Image 1 (cartoon, rainbow, N blue to C red):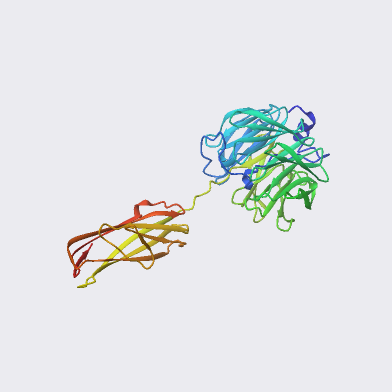
Image 2: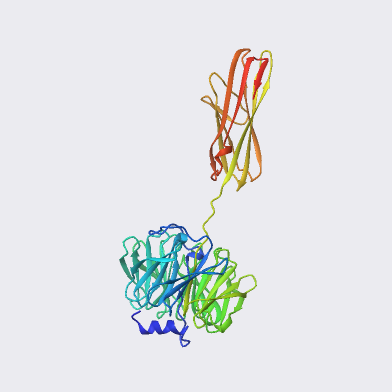
Length: 472
């Protein structure tokens, strides 16, 4: 980084004469983005993985948050100040403040696959929901650089307040927000016009910013308190007292909690976002905490300790430290990969029964269609069609008969539940061995049906006369 001032502020934890800088908590883990990054080449890790930028070691430590094991130590550029998970979790972007670059880490192989120029004094980065662009907070230049991730080129430079230390992008991608440390403000950027459209004042140095998953509010760390902003009006809703310098803030995936790390007092505070009150405090070992991020299930926090070269794991239910993992020297930023969304599926099974009803004049075949949702999720809607072979006709009390076809619909249907549909085909008095073969097939359903093997059922009936009908 070109500025000795900002660098010194980082190295201290840091210097307690001023608010410690935000250490670029992963905004994606808070539900801030979705989609696939432009440079995606692989799938996200199977388990949520914490990526920790080690400022003094020029490395990133990757820790599996399920097993607690360190899975990789990844060399990056000089003095990494920020680590951010891209949409989808396939890449991690690391800002190397003294190398004026970003390292791109493939989260499947845990290797650096690219290095992107990032201005003259990069400090933090956020990736757009589309995954196409990165917004880099250029601390010394008082600007945000917009980087096209496909071409690796800076396509715009947007002037903001003095020394932006953090940047966040709204879930819909229409706005970007910077925490301007020396100006005590938050700058609002219209991402379409790439201009600053508003400036929101705070009371003191703004060091980090995180948005709620619905994009309606922002939580901004300052000295001694957290500002809550209404992003529809760009005004301050309230201020939450947090005695001690606030360093970093992140939101739980469901948006019910904001977590704030406070290095000078060695606390992590939990804020209830419904009441905007502090509802929990965790004392950290070693008395310092730099950056914080939350696992996708909301059960644990990962809190870096710059001076102790480790990361603490906090149980959010009990507000206690349950584990401590060593990292590289000077861990100052942490980001946790999301969990891949499991698509909803509903297995709609089709069963067809045929019952002959002999009669001298009005013989017929009664068909019963049984539709069963084998789950695992609820069925919203489904359609089953049964074409009728000529010259067969049918009537139905609960299905549609048209153009030589019976069409039956169902839904919603809970997992494990079944429903029936019925139709009837007349049999001629003198059939002379006429064969009636009917096949019922699921043609559409929502959500996706994962098992095509039970989507079709067939029944064959043969009639000599309306009194002699056999079905198999």
